[in-house]
Image (cartoon, rainbow, N blue to C red; front, side, top):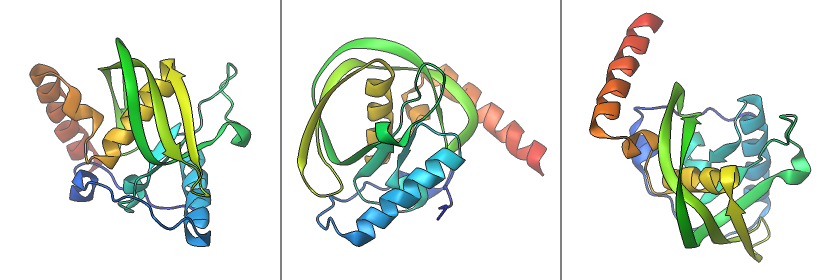
Length: 171
């Protein structure tokens, strides 16, 4: 089932997400719905809060060299904790909750991640490049933060101006 994605400036996006304690059929169905929603929206990642569910859940499906997203590459990440972040990299990010806007954001280049899968089992992965960036972007959502909050003052002002203009054009 496709879930509605909430968009900026919706206040729900500011909520800090709660730890998941029940790894049940309800969670499994929700994860499946998140995947359908992300793929239908042409996203590579989605945090539960973006579909109005404030729980510490995110999914990622990084495209291959041809740009295809295969379900077997789907990462379902629950209760994530970043360890050992290293390096810095600048990457142009976009967001399903801030449609149509892309800006360069500085992130850690590599990191380790501890999390649980849909069955509550402990997992760990080491990430670099786009995967590391996407993990940080989605975890920010779980903390109630959007990528536009990482912009410099001048870039943030530029974003606000472009956003207001885009809203007027929609009317």
